[in-house]
Amino acid sequence: MRGLQVRGAVVRYGDLVAVDGVDLAVEPGEIVALLGASGSGKSSLLRGIAGLEPLAAGEVSWDGDDVSAVPVHARGFGMMFQDGQLFAHLSVAGNIGYGLYREPCVRRRARVEELLAIVGLPGYGGRRVGELSGGQAQRVALARSLAPRPRLLLLDEPLSALDRNLREHLVGVLGEVLRTTGTTAFYVTHDQDEAFALADRVGVMADGQMLQLDMPETLWRRPASRQVAEFLGYQPFVSADVAARLGRVRGGAGELVAIGPAGLVLSPTGDEVPIVDQRHHRGEVLIDVRLPDGQTATVRSPERMEGEVLTVALDPAGCAVIPR
Image (cartoon, rainbow, N blue to C red; front, side, top):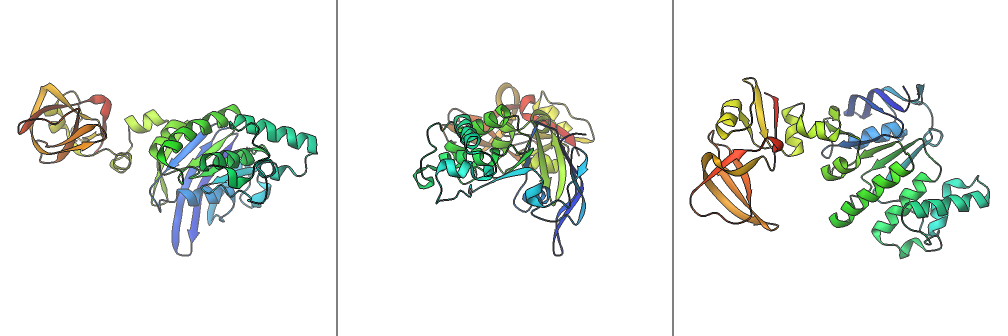
């Protein structure tokens, strides 16, 4: 197989097993994003792939060639981190061209100008790093990481230090740049919106293990376990009988219906449930209701509701059926 292959990777820090037997493949030109809570092992896996952490067991290979013992600088992999790690004493062009010192000056300048155009900063080559905004600095860091044409780009939380509006903008820029350049990328993040917007496939890690790796729509619509569903924001989980009472979603006797953030909706043909609480949130009202099994779920409404009960139903597009 071409591209990146990780087989049975184990990363240890003393007695702590941070990555526990992970298998992973990233095809050429593919973008794979990895999600997980702090301490899940996602960044340790990236560092193991890069060679920044030694593997206690397993193998990292590229196009079938084992690179587990190859030094970091010789793997042909690029890296981009949260803080960008730009050199303050160099210009923007100097930063981008830093890894091209072996290239002739003419070719180096041409590559820098090409990348500045690709990341949307034409004409910025002469600026100092201190003159850049946070978003501009991360674009320069991206251009620098792409300059040597790495066969794999590893990105560890590259947008997490930016505010949400800027992150939402830059994730689109990042995806466009990676696809324009045909870059194979492995992207670690805690932000689900980033991962789903950017990646061809998304994985979820916990306790050092890969719980599921799938296309974004498959991961969301068919979580492999309750643990994955909970991480994605599904809550609560109801039996097939309760789901049938709420309507339009069917689960088997050995299954649970996971209700997503928008899985319970107002419906005149649904089931009456008591209101527990109401609160305003970003231009809408979140209404907590008591389900037939006693669990609490939330319904979104454009306005506060009068009375003590609501008529609600499950929306199949916002629910998932998972193993019990």
